[in-house]
Amino acid sequence: MEIIIVALNSLKANKLRSLLTVLGIIVGIFSIITISTVVNMLQNSIEEGVAQLGQTTFQIQKYPAMMDRGDRARFRNRKDITIDQFYALKEKLEGEAEAVGAEQWDFGKLFKYENKETNPNVQLVGCTPEAFPNNKW
Image 1: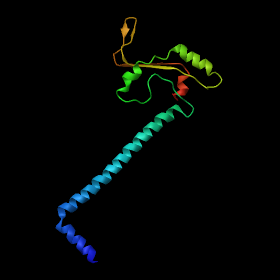
Image 2: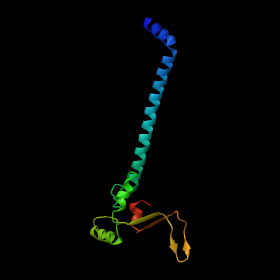
Image 3: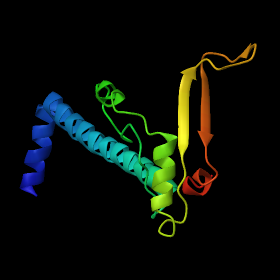
């Protein structure tokens, strides 16, 4: 009982120190909860992205799925994957793969046909029919 009285007297005598200690504990707990929430959200986002592809799907592409800001210039110099390479791969995987699809994405470009043109911020996607089940579209 005497220990409790000494502790209460100490709290009364050092109000500012006690307040700062409690505030530090609250900030620490809040920080841990926030970081845990952010990590869980990132993990869920990555898992959802991978789950969209399915367990038996993989992609071959010029750019990696995830990269840092400075990496784009490094991968930009890679050769584009051609439609002939796609057809060669599709032929090699015949009987082995359920579907082999190709996709081409273009972002922020101006597209023209005859005397018509689009806005310069159009996103255009072209694909073979097999790309639909591969992407679960």
